[in-house]
Length: 303
Image (cartoon, rainbow, N blue to C red; front, side, top):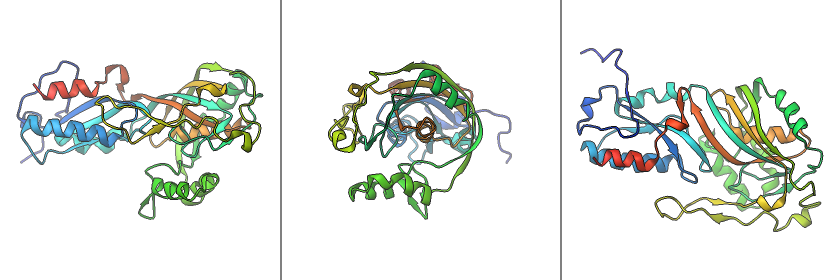
């Protein structure tokens, strides 16, 4: 029997109605979800799969996603149901767009606010003009080393597992060196970078040396999830440090780590940097303004 050639999957939209029979969707269903802050991509899949299995009455229903988002990122996560899971790899290959908030003058082992600041850098020289000029050098193809706090596989072991062991041993200063030695570079492409805003901060050094840095910007606290569950992710609050910050729109190829791009941009400016926010604003043709919240998806699957 021939496959259903030319039939496209249903793209779920707000207010849509679904029948109770998954066979009514021979090419499957794609749901553009706006991933909640501090949720893992697996959290989203787990929640939607439970509801989809009950809605369609099919225990072995396939549900997956096309491209992981970090817990501290929000934005477009493509959830695939049924036959649409076969398209996950192709969907993941599409170009992406991100809105990244970057703080200069300090680094963290995870390159975002999941881990506490481990080192401060000079930052008084970082201006809007300097950031714009440094951004220009990142346009085009380049080799990138993924963060050690990532799902990259290193001889069958997830890189983040190696990173966590290093953290438990107090080896925070060796994270970058370990990543460079263990993770192979990947060829990526930055199509464009647009500086949306820049704040020079207070212009004062937050911590002139490591001794003074102790306890500064290290108030990690859990951010409650929308469903009230205790989160696994702690988020540091570095807003009182008065460091320079920038908001940048980035269009890039698949496989680009924006946390690593923030690291590299900080180095290019003769300082350090980490992400303080990240939104995937577009994945292929799917835009965040058209994505559904998890609650909207669950409401559709309960009808």
